[in-house]
Length: 446
Ligand code: SAH
Ligand code: SF4
Ligand code: F3S
Image (cartoon, rainbow, N blue to C red; front, side, top):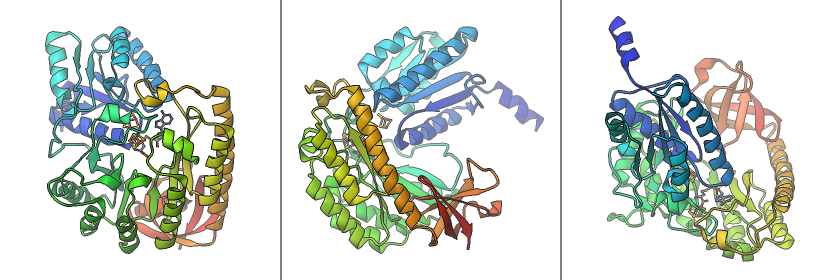
């Protein structure tokens, strides 16, 4: 015991700051795995750590600003404690203009999205030579298997099935920061899901920028529906979720597969982005509003009780009031269970950044408010319609807002808060919905 404690104080401590999407959450678990297998241990806070690692996002200006703000704080700490090492990685680090700025800010190590496995070497290099280290790969390398990681504890876990994106939506930086689309082999994914199940997780979420095109480019003939079916056979995993679905690639086979298999949750996140065909075309999304409407009604018809969620952008260059009205019209028709709404943010290097007719900030703000108002109303109405019904939920843990209560998730991704004994955490149980608010439902054990 004493020996362990002594060893621990001699270990180098790391702390990871994670921004952005689930891909980054998962990458941070991999970074943690790499560092721990090199003998590092996790610190409780950036203050307490020897190495602070930024895992960043550049999807919108606001995400970059958050990371820069935090970097200011950490460099201040470093001035008091010069031995603290700052490593900066993730999507921002892939961008040359960001790297110029990092150089001035006193970052010690810069690494990209394609070489996170190199981080332990880069840290060693920095510590031996005492000079800043920048290593970015412009292109994706081969997928390295198996991938070590330290998974966040809980009942649900992320599993990558593919990396990168080939779609080049005109507003989006992701294809530049994450490289070309490539799929993991089914056998590697299945092995990982088995391990995740053995560790005690009951739910997995498959991650990819466009899971509907899974399997393209592999030697084996396999598509996303095939992969899902294989994974429903893995014991211990009770629920399978996935994101993101691209509306242009959503096949009938996939819809029927979700309908037929119990373990596949009836929740589909398929970003619409905009409701007007003119804007969809300028966004290079590859579908029309008519296609999306047909797809939405097909999903609602064939998958009983399905919940649809989406992402929407307001103020894309050239968006006129009538285009925006078309977005409102779409959400009124489709009635998404939930929506993530964003103001268009100029990303330099993307095609839309060069478009004329950028929409003034005031108009973007006003449209976002109007959009949110309509969407909140829809979400409240849907939530109210669930009151009185009983749903199977997976209990995730104590509620964040009320420690005496538990929080759980329905198959359709609704959060339900209820009173119950702690030993229910990790269990699938039934709750009856007693009360509804915009974002949460309250219930009681059945
Ligand atoms: N691969 C996913 C989206 C990943 S980015 C898909 O294709 O659906 C997550 C969301 O961020 C996008 O759906 C989009 O709504 C939003 N987004 C991306 N780039 C943006 C930008 N430049 N400005 C505002 N929102 C943006
Ligand atoms: Fe970005 Fe479009 Fe790829 Fe999604 S599909 S990551 S929005 S380029
Ligand atoms: Fe994700 Fe942000 Fe990169 S959304 S892929 S972390 S740009």
